[in-house]
Each structure stands twice: as structure tokens, then as C-alpha cells.
Image (tube, rainbow, N blue to C red; front, top):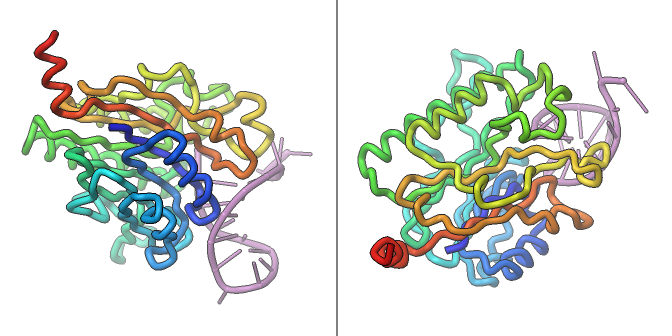
Length: 276
DNA sequence: ATGCCTTGCATGGCAAGA
């Protein structure tokens, strides 16, 4: 089963090339981030016409996450349990943003995640980002405690570069977000909870994102911030993967590239283990 | 160069991205 994560930076602007991408790479499940559209205005027909079902949550022009699947979509959740909102005024109810959607597709629990950017280290959004990640960790722990054999993947735009080599110039990021120790610890906490980041060993590409500004893509100056974090049962079946650099290179591309992973079906995995 | 693109929107100069 081929599962992809892709921050599309507007699903309406890029509907043509997203559908083209699904066909070109024979995709089973695509988790999108930054659809930048409300549920009402989502271009559902473009995907249903192509043979996919859609689950989406979008409340305004910001954020927005979706899952499109041709292997079924069941039990949709439009936020993860315990997902915090942004509370610029602690006295008021938190605004839970459209940053997480979960659905079961072909026996895999898929969570499309758009982790808050953090903006500046001194900005309240930085604390929001850390809080969001730690609450996600608690959710993952709960899921694995309930069912250690669950096949689930938490994938998306994590807005964290876990290693220094995940950015083109670590000195450029001195004092900036995405590379700070607290952010990396929050990412590592997801790994400590039992997840495996499966894309790094499967692709030779360094980066998944290149800023539009300053010809960053043409200069090879990117960041590795999009990932697929799989539970043990699913991670054991990850076989091949790649970052679709060509998709990022075209005119009118998103600033993120699709990150693709092929997982063996549950049956094949059992057979494979027996053969071993 | 507190910039450089690109998006959506009460289509205006913003806000936001990373």
C-alpha cells in the first residue's frame, strides 16, 4: 500500500497537479496539509471523479488537512484526542485549529498532521507548537497502550528539522525555530513513545521543503521537515520510499515535495516473516 | 536588505508561512 504525505499549499490552486500526481504514482492514500480551504469549498469532485474518497477539515483560509484514499475511509476524527488550541487569551476558550484529521484506510489508521509553525522562539505560537506535539505524544502513547499491534501512521508537516544536516546551513537557523532543542526533544518524544520515522532510511534525498524566496530550490537549499512516523507493526512493513523532487521543480509547485512510502499489506508481511 | 515568493481574502494591503 502506497501512502504519501504532502503539504500542498492550497488544494484548490493545485487540484490539477495533485490528481495528476495520484495517477502518476499510483497512490493509495494521500495525506494533505495546508489545503487552505473551508470544508464547504473543498474540491471534492476532483478526487471522487478520480476514484478516491475524501475526509477534510478546514475552517478558514489557514491550515486545513485532508486524507484522500482509494482503499476506504472510515471512523474519521477531525482532531486528535487532547489536541490543544491556540489560546492567545488564556481566559477564553481555545481555538482548535484544522491541523489534524484521522481515518482508517485499508486497515491503517492514518493521521494527517500540520504541526504549528512556531513563528519566533519568543512568540506564543512557539509554546503552542511544543504543547501541540506533547499532547500528540500522549495520544500516541494511549493508542499503543490500548493496542500495541495497531497499524497506524502519523504523517505530515512536522515543522521540525531533527538533525543539523536536515537544513542546508545550520548557522542560518541560529536563533530561529525548527532546529531548537525543545522542538527536537518534542519530536524525539514521539519516537520514544514507540513510533519509527520510516522515510529517512528509504530515501537518499536530504530535503522535503524549499522556500519560494531566494531561489532556494534551484540552489539546493532546503529543509527536511515532512515525515511518516509509523507504529511498530506498520513500520516493520515499510519497504521503499522516495521524495518526489520532480513535483517540487515544476512551475506552480507547492513549496513542499510529496514524501512517498510503500508498505506491505498485512498478509504479505506475515508471509514474509514466515519465509524469513 | 527585519528582503527575496506564494497563498487567500470583506480584492486590500495584509497575514501567514518556515
